[in-house]
Amino acid sequence: MWTYPPDHLDLTLHQVDVWRILLDILPDSVKLSESTLSAEETQRASRFHFDSDKHRFIASHTSLRNILTRYLHCEPGQITFQKNNYGKPFILFDLNLEFNLSHSDDYALIAVTRGCKVGIDVERVREDMALESIASHNFSPGEVSELMALSPEQRISGFFNCWTRKEAYIKAQGLGLSLSLDSFDVSLAPNEPAILRATRPDPNLASRWTLVSLSVDSGYAGALAVEGEGLEFRYWDWNATQ
Ligand SMILES: CC(C)(COP(=O)(O)OP(=O)(O)OC[C@H]1O[C@@H](n2cnc3c(N)ncnc32)[C@H](O)[C@@H]1OP(=O)(O)O)[C@@H](O)C(=O)NCCC(=O)NCCS
Image (cartoon, rainbow, N blue to C red; front, side):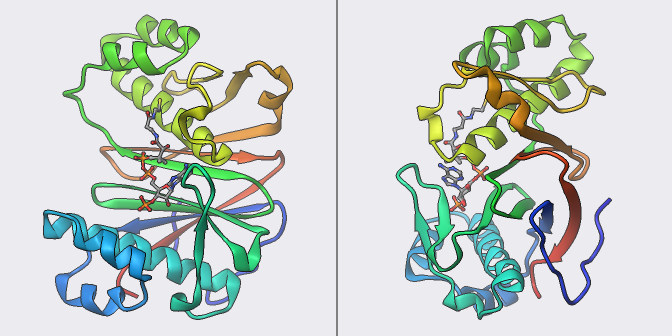
């Protein structure tokens, strides 16, 4: 599913580009990458306790800048990010270009569209979590019932399907947790397609959104939420050191 992109990429209205970045960047290339970051990004990078976390942060943010230059045709350091009231970054320079970033352990994912709200989420799958308790606090009643109806073997992937799909939708809306987690239902059963099943109080929203389950790597779960239908998805690999 994932391939390296051609030198030149055009992004049309119904296309969605999804980028996968392995964040195992070498410490030597970190200094070089750091030079394209903003003062705020550099300051955030300096706050990490462990070098490995700092390196991953730098790799994900320099990759984001480098990937966006492919659409904006500028230098990575020229991109200025703004944030909405809930912290979702956007680019003032080109309001039509929508993007979202997610990172977890060794992977980052970035989604880019023209004019469609987009959210993405990647999570490292952990088997040592109190799934039922976390689900009861964060999932809708319908999602909790569906999760509990799964066999114990299926429950872990059902849980991460639900988590990443909900997170991707929340991130696409860009309203943070002011959008209540039980105001919408997503599908979660393994082998069932990703669907935004219901939205409340406006039931019409559900049919306007496309959810996609992403195969990132073994041990990871990923999901994408895009406002729109009939979309074409392209899956690109990005080398964090380029
Ligand atoms: C802020 C939030 C995006 C954090 O998500 P996360 O899973 O910790 O982090 P991710 O790696 O997926 O995404 C982080 C990136 O999203 C972007 N982002 C930040 N705030 C955002 C927002 N409000 N909306 C969309 N994207 C946002 C940034 O690019 C950020 O990268 P950075 O921190 O390196 O600058 C937010 O969705 C949140 O706090 N969620 C709470 C988690 C939760 O309870 N989820 C329940 C799911 S059932």
